[in-house]
Length: 265
Length: 293
Figure 1: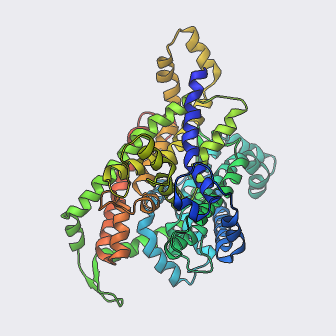
Figure 2 (figure 1 turned 135 degrees about the vertical axis):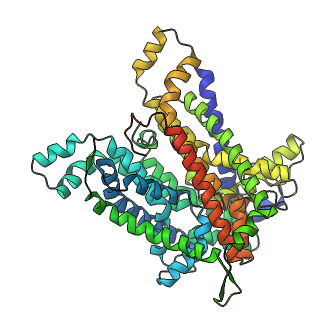
Figure 3 (figure 1 turned 60 degrees about the vertical axis):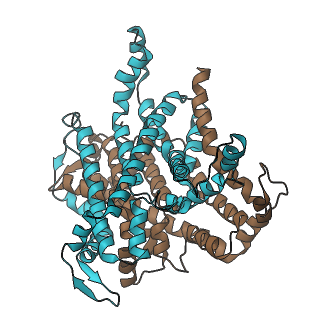
């Protein structure tokens, strides 16, 4: 038994090493980083973090990212809920084809969409807005959300719907008061996935923004090329991008195991 | 059983509109480019299927495609078994379960360019933790910017680091859904550990593993940001995967026609492999689970 638990321990250590290195670097000055190898910061400095929290070009990046990720999560879950309900409860003309077509959008390489998206969103006047990135990210989030929610909804027996109708519930009332609370963990997991894939994506977010809605990741790449190689600052900015994800995952920690089964195991 | 109800379409309309706006219009733009030649200034000339023909005869495309399959094949061959092994070794209940899950999920929540940058500084030969260790403690020469082998090992290590947890979490979800009674029955029958794995655990994990392989296939086949930030496709072209090459052609050289043709072929390959795999993996249990995909 003891030997067996070594495997996850070693694996987690392997996962933590690069993260440790990033965080250790963020507390070093760029001079110290470049001057040679040291396992721990010799002269602890918070200067890097101070720059990020006081310079608007840096902290605006975080705010922008959080705005479009939140918008995306809301849009994704809202439109995916009714669709997933339809797929899990009814048969209709072309349902299987439609479901597979939705999934194909998850398969499309985002690199393909970079240029057309730029043109499309410029044409409709949404270029460099948060909503543009939020909408663009629904391309790969909505299919996944429908897939996950459909799994959770299929796990709920149909008798629940029928009993509610017999009891005189209207559809919206049933959906909001009975059905949604039943699949609350599914909604949480879906929101988590939507948040995650929108937060980590850079190519589209960068293509669709210039100044007003520029994501933190783009600020980082720009700094990396323009301000020389400010390694300490970049490490601090990188370390800070881990925090929102860590917070979100903390909230769904008890659903992760079940949620990753996408509700249907 | 599901009832037939054509009004269900009404529920699907919002998704349909949104995805159509995001997918159909851009794909049609790409199709449009793929049959034309442009010299800028919005001047386009009909080119027919020339770009496709040129692409299918080009050395460059096949070598990028080959590297892409090598990459995807390697990471699948490592991540799937490794993920299953780790999931099997994890505790089933108790305090450590959420701790393990949260820590394991952490790499997946880091923006992709940060992942690339992080591995870059992690592997720098003179000041990175791993790079320093391999060069100065193990005494093996390791420099990603010079040796293609080192670059390959690094991008694969990075992907294993980044995504094995997805396989772990999915397999783990499959494992915890097995009732204790199954294990007790196996114990009474005197089943070996391998037999338990083969006849109880593996069948229960089949569905989640299908999802894991599909997601990992699609995402690794489309991978762009992480290897681009880590190696920039180099040294030379040794780690130029399909997406990196595509962006190079489209935005670097602004050859829209060839890039569009390449996009379509690229997309078609992803679609075909995913569909084949999905059909094969779900063939057996199709009647049991109803006729849904």
